[in-house]
Amino acid sequence: MIISRYGEKKMANNSKTPQKSKPKQNSKSKKNEKKVNPWMIVLIVCAALAAMLVLVLIAINIARPAPEPPLAQDDSWQKVQDAGVLRVATSADYPPFSFHNADYVIDGFDPALIREIGKKLGVRVEISDNAFEGLGSTLRVGQADAVIAAISVTPEREALVDFSNIYYVGEDGILARSDSGIGTITNPGQMAGKRVGVQKLTAYAKWAQETLVDGGLIASNQLFVYAKPEHAVDDLKQGRLDLVILDLQPATAALSLGDLKLVGQGLDQQRFAIAVPSGANTLKAEINRALLTLQNEGTVNQLISTYLGLKPEDVIPPPTPEPTPEACIDAMQFVDDLTFDDKDLTDFPKVDPGQAFQKGWRIRNSGSCTWNSSYFIKYVHGSDPAAQMQGQPTAIKGEVKPGQTYDLYVDLVAPQAAGKYVGYWQMHNPANRSFGQTIWVAVKVVTTEPEVPTATTAPSATPTNLPQPTATVTALPSTPTATQVPPEPTATEIPPEPTATEKPGSDLLNAKWVLAGYLANIDDPELTDPIPDVELNLFFDENDAFNGNAGCNTYNGRYVTDGKQIIFKGFVVTQLLCEQPAGVMDQESMYLALLESAEEYRLNADEQLELIRWVINANN
Image (cartoon, rainbow, N blue to C red; front, side, top):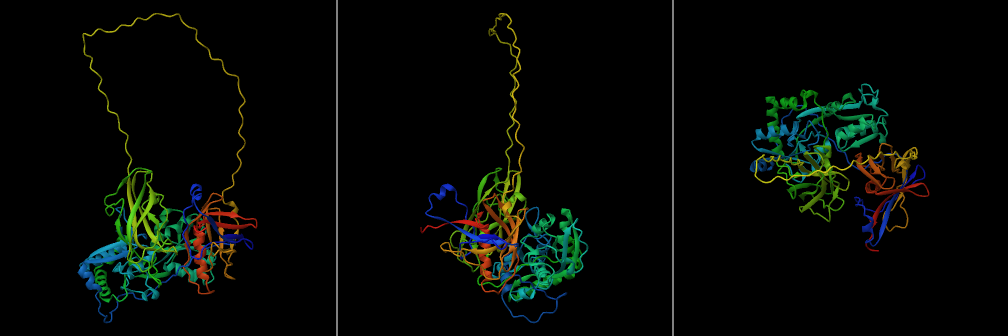
């Protein structure tokens, strides 16, 4: 890919189909390859990048349960009764609604509520942790009977799944830096011109796009969409954002991190409900019956007080998954641990500090899409910053068809500090969208205490009749003592004054790079021009962050470079779908995939930035 400075630079890439980056080949292995070709993307300098994601939200105006019309009969409730288990999916990365507690058990307001519902129904509740973005798919492929994850009800979602009665109503909270000078925000107009961060696939991401961007209050490259809310808060603290919009309670909890203040709330209310498969009328009716009983008994209010610390009318709505219609459905189900089995987090395997090991899982493709090498698993969060254990995204090898199982391994290195570590991993599709059950690796790092030598008992003084040796000392004439003569002083060379070293990658800064062309195929004789009047751009800053526009969506992330090699990581993109001009989404998908798989960069003679990935061509 080649990128040029604004009006000049170009980007080039090499594939019609987006591919994940391959590990760099070392110099020794390259000698055995038949042919090594680079692909490139050519960019002209610009600012901000984004990937395609479709945002679907639903809102219903029900404050209290209303009498339900007669429902068509189905066997959804009968199946739960026969099994004696209600299988529930959640996404345990959004405290206080759903999270892993200190004992690594899924806890929070939502899990506690569904467990109480299970008691009323007389069935055991089995909760699984899933990728936030894949909750809808988990429900639609029959991997769960219900989903509870602070899901906002919207008309678009109602077209795909059915919802219980509302169990909670919440609102937004707006954060700013304490030293920002931003005052109280009571209307969207006061957010004009600000850099705003939101979590993707949430009601607030949709609200920010429609109200702030489409309303002309901020530019599209001023809206930053994050996979995790904590990433947005971190960028706010680092001064990369002006505002972050979250649910009120997570926003309030973030104040404990320091240097932040709550500047607004209540601009966008949300209503939460439990999702069940479309047409599961008997199951929905039983859930509504149990929910109404719990509300009347005051149990729901007690849980709100325990987990949210607020009265029901004060609570706020969290992010919601996006069940978007697809040609096929991505879903994954955990089958078994192949190595380092932790017995469901009850018996942590022991490892030494710095020990290299492989964690293996057996998983099943429970969806309808065929997995290939563009599908991969990656670390998403953990019990400690070191819980990633140096694990890197790992791609599927070959094809895994729907219904097939696959044995997946990742290479890890144990942390140096003693203690327990749990790292959570999720599958991702070619669009970098997570799906399926969340799986984990759990270990206990132990250090071996050095052995303390035991004291040896001194022999007792026992008289013996053995002859004792004698020594004869003969006096020698004294020898003169030597006096050291100080050496002649020698000149010490004074080291030169240190010179400032330019930061690697400084040649990428202070420029807007705009896509000028790309290689659609490794064998193409020349670059393919981007779609006319569609600007794809990229901007690097001195804080090792990048952002840009991919044609329809904006994007951002982090980069690492040594002045030659470069890695783009942590991609976060908005969730828009552009129908015009024709081909814009295909071009965007290719651009983002190529950008993410770049390995090297260079500036050519025309001052164009070339992003390069080496490709093995075995046919030549």
